[in-house]
View 1 (cartoon, rainbow, N blue to C red):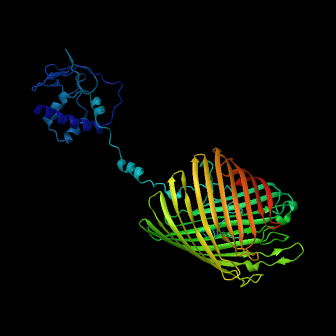
View 2 (cartoon, helix red, strand yellow; view 1 turned 135 degrees about the vertical axis):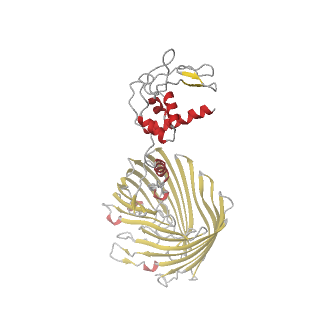
View 3 (cartoon, rainbow, N blue to C red; view 1 turned 90 degrees about the vertical axis):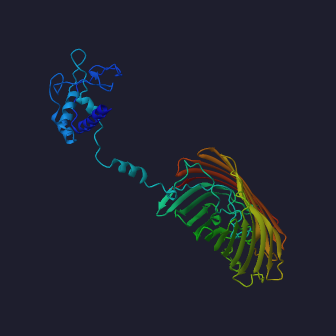
Length: 567
């Protein structure tokens, strides 16, 4: 064993020195014998050592067995610097052979070439901090921030829905069967617009131009109906903040319908809302909302019933401020709202003007909702609402004071029974009393629903129902009990081709007056997306209203074809 350790240490030092020396080019690889050097059976160029293990055969020349050259000076000096004595170096010289000559057997010994030792030595040390560089590349790359991912906009499609100025069915005047904001329908991500990045906001603009035909743009009686070509222009913008906390988002939309052959029927419309959410902490948040609605009155409306030159504009706008506090599974929210409605004066064909400023009013409301999460699937709630409506004019043109106060209570639940069916359903009762004793108080049920059913990955069904009491100027009537129901089915024929079918039912019951209206509308729409920013749209809309009031019934067919651009 001492002999083996004595041999191992020089060989290790020799390998280190060989790694530092330059590597000569080899003409050919050295050859080796496959004979296993077992004890008692040494291989060629080897002898049996004192411990019974094979050892290199000594050469008295101290150099190459073939040429007699001494070991290279660089190798010898390196070994001397390693602390080996002269005797050890001399013994090592007799065991190491440089070159590649085969010796042994009867007249030669198979020595280990110096070049082979250099090949077997450790590779040259790499210069630089490689480990640090690799770690830096792997761990110091900034991860992708989720809030910076592109926001995909779904195009607006579907049946026009009435817009509620307040909750619990308090619908704004002029919004029924209007072309207001509608819930976006899902679209394949490969064809959805990505939007524009402006600072910390993602902005989704869009413009649509339609050309078509309208059989009754005035929406008057069938005997007085006159068709016209229709030009419809729509512009909209949606935006959303990319803040890590809080959120500011909104949708603004406006349009204008032009009828060259019946210019008095041309009219604007628009709707929009802006919402701000402030997260005070994990359990408390504040919500602020601003909204507006612009629409027009139809000439045959019971509130107007006049041969107007153009359709009067009705504008409603308001704001809400609320707070929501969570106590574990219990959630309490309080929200206050202010809404204002303004009516444009109507101009008659004989030059006279119908004053409608007495219909301008403000509405103040306060809502309290208490909800308890039974499970992640079902969350029942109870809503309490109190509001008051105050007109600018103390009395209207008929000498009636129309200021009123209302209270309502509803109970319902929001649910997600499966990932295919989600929504909210509530029912209750409302009471509205009027300042003028000639106006009868209204007690009516409230039913509200908003359901989304994903029947399949290609088919989506939406159902909405809303009830409420709207204002009127009809003499003797205290208000209008309104019910509106819409059903919409969207099916994707291809990734970039979808068809939408829908219908809406409307009922207006003028309390205190013998006027009732029932309405129906149906729509079919086709959307073909060429790419993310260009879509072809074709639509057909049929609507009719049957009224017990003379001159208020009408039917209308509208066909439109256009292009939608999402820059």
